[in-house]
Structure formats: C-alpha cells, structure tokens
Image (cartoon, rainbow, N blue to C red):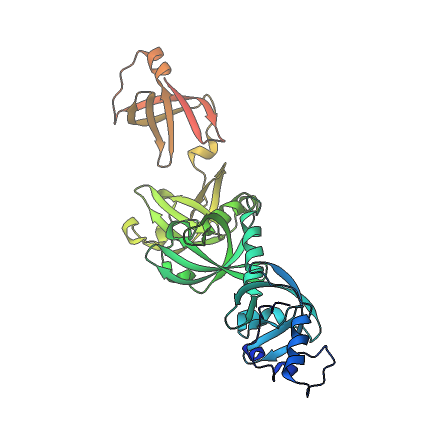
Length: 362
C-alpha cells in the first residue's frame, strides 16, 4: 500500500505525537511505530480543495487558530483575529458551519480556511447584482486628492469603496472634511475590477429622495439651509438634506444688510417656499406678491427689451419676471425694436408649469 500525503499538523511527522490527534480510533498508544503507521495509512479521509466550501465542526482554539474537524487528516484552521472571530459569535464546540478552504501547505501539512473570504465573496456577488436604485451603507474613512476612501457595510461584511468628490453631495461640499467619519446611504455607481473597489455615489442616493421631499414642502413655513453658490441674479441654497432652491436677489431680506458679494458658500440663511415649478424650487426671504403671481392672459404691461435672439425678443417685466415675444409676433407687428428699449406688450399665454410667459407687441 502506497503511503498517502499527510495534510495538517507537522507534528504528524513524529508519530509519537499522532496519539494527540487520533482521538476517534481506539489505539494502544504503547504499540510500536509500525502499527501506528498502518492505522494512519488506513484512516479514511476526504481531500481538501482550495476554493471549495466545506461543512466543518468547531472543536476549539489553540496556538492562534480556530480548529475545525472536517473529515480530513488534520484540523481545518482559521486564524484567530477579530475579522474572523466575528463570525464565531454564539458558536459552541460541536456546532457545524461552512468555511472556505483558502490554502493547503503540503510541505508543512497545514489546511487553512476563512470565514471572511467566504462571506465577502457572497457579498460581492450580491452587491453587483443589486437592483437599480438600491441603497447601501458606507462609512467615510479618509480623504484623497480625488475623493474619499469608504467602507461599504453590506450583509455583515465590510468591502472597500471610493467616492469621487463630485459624487459626495447633491451640490459641491463647501467643507469637504464635513463628511469624514460619517455613515450614510449611497448607491453603487460602478465597479473597478483593476482596483477591486466599488465606486459609490451619495449624490445619486440623495437625488432619489428629491421627488418625495418636494411633496412635503409647505408654503408659509420657515426653512433653514446653507448657501452653495451665487450668481448675478440670485443665491442657490441647499436644504432638507437633498433639495436645492434659488432665492432671486430681489427676494433677499434687505434687513440682513448683506450684499451679494458678502454671501458665500456655507452661509446659513432662513427662507420661505415661493413656488415649485416641476423640480425647480423658487425661494424667498420676503413674503410678497409679484407680477408672476397675478399675471393673466390679455393683460397689458410695459417692459424693457433685455435681449434679441433668433427665436424672438426677451422682455423684462419686473425684477424676476421675463417674457418672450416670438419672431412670428414680431413679424405681425411690423415694428422694429432694439435691446434696452421700453415696449408695451400684451400677455397672450402663460405656461405656469414651465414658468414661461408669451407676449405680443401692442
């Protein structure tokens, strides 16, 4: 009979110590070496295979390893470290569980396995196959020049992820360090096979919340947000976690005593909801009625030509309301107008859903 390769503890090479492990066979430990060799060669066992899953029985811990009986010629061993130990919570000696064989050292007769690699592998497959729009939890660990290193917490395991700066918020973060150490929901944007890293997007998750959050908005209620940017005509404000609105400069509260160049990203301001046009939110710090609130078809108004375009003339009706005289209406009037000119116009249509006003010359 040819002698089999022995997997497991190198102490088996000294058959005087084999008695410490051959617990299932009634052996007279004073028998000579040949009898022990014969028993060992005849011992029925399975062959471990790297990358395969095996059901094993927990038998205890020794010499820095969790030991398991799996029907092999030696124990299956998993390193005693926190990441592996977390899967043995509430596990007792004699309990059976699955492990993944990760390495077989034939020279030293050693079988190694892992819970982490097993469950990470399962989690990776499930993460890739998540339905579009599903959220996962991530923890922001540290900043890099291009974004943030994050830990994705999914199905009880932690997977490496990366969040680019541009995907860290619904708008550009005025303080990039503000999200360090935070845990929040994100969506998977893509997977980098070269890096073995998932690209995640907080922005995508926040955008998914916008429709429901818009429905919750109330007119007349005071809201608080922070400035994300300014333009010549107004201030953009982020609020309620995922919403962005614009306060026209004429609707800024003059009592604040702030000029437009004094309003910087990160400044906290209070405001009201003025109007919601599809997914555009118009804000105001002053509750008042404007031309847009009262304008009607057939109404005559005096305005100023702001610009001439190939499709018509843009006319300013008040500080925050503009209208359009289409080229077809200009042709009908046979009037020549120029930029900056005051004109008398009539309202011929109002598209409130898109905040558009169509005019003709009087």
